[in-house]
Image 1 (tube, rainbow over the protein chains, first blue to last red):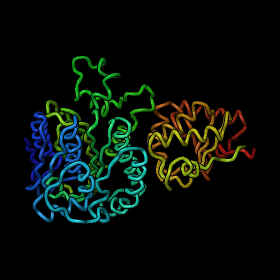
Image 2 (cartoon, each protein chain N blue to C red; image 1 turned 90 degrees about the horizontal axis):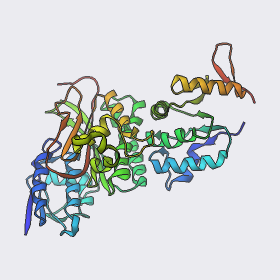
Image 3 (cartoon, chains in turn cyan, red; image 1 turned 90 degrees about the vertical axis):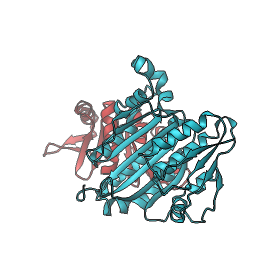
Image 4 (cartoon, each protein chain N blue to C red; image 1 turned 45 degrees about the vertical axis):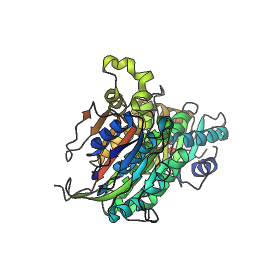
Length: 301
Length: 141
């Protein structure tokens, strides 16, 4: 028997909970999963990475390879192909529907196609590629000081390293920039990093659970990592990565949100109304990190 | 004084591929270990960051902060604003200081207490002298 998991029509961080709930329901049965994206009209990097994470998790425990029905809209299909999604998805899903043969990247809106992160070498490649492609976009279209574009690479590097250092499995990263008409009326750069690994709670449990006592859970683990900068290592130099990302985003009025297990934490600037901490969400594997950097200066809604 | 260590060259020897970015802990560890072998037990080390495009917090911690466990004075040159963005918070977190060598003279980077200790060491070891303007400059030694 096959269980259906609906991919939202507009698949981004806001509709992600709808997807996570559908995934949790489908995965509970232990049957083969069918991810149905035929009606999907748009997906952010967060959506694309999240879909891969779900695909990887759907095979856990020796379950049959999940199925994926591709978007019916040829424009959407072409975009997913250019974003490098199908290259990664082909390794995880049995894909149903015709996938266009398009070379990923070399597209103005795709700053970094969906890229697998398995080891430190992949992080080097990601940082090298993003600097080649993103510097001009960050300075000319987002109005970020050319000197600060290196901070963007640092933030990306640290976000990817969370996978290598803590997830216990591989993950993916994708970076795109686009016009955010409805939400902000500005251009934004969106970084999505996700994995189907052990998540923040499991990583921090040996060193932090006792401190939090009854409060310990996915939410408090995220708080410990993002707000308090704690790490599973006792070395005082650890935990600098997320702190550095926060500091970079704060300087450029950016946003960070991390979802892990059943909780989601966000540090949102004034232009965003995301809740600081949401608990009791549907269980979803690993961790998903979202970074958004808006265009600087004029055009605020 | 010992010649500066070319960090970019050490990076090239430490990772497969022609990367110019000091990123990830494994890379930082590999680079530091090579530098440690090069400086042996010397109390003073010189590192030249020219050619290094980006350094992240993890590498700054692995290289700069951990070298300062054994080295008394760490002189850095070729340091850009982008490098400082990663190195400075790491030094703050550990309560350590380094010496940045620029064409204008020497600058101590790190929290004031740690910087004061390094300043005294520089003068005591006659590696630096006070200029007429009150700043520090390297001695010819």
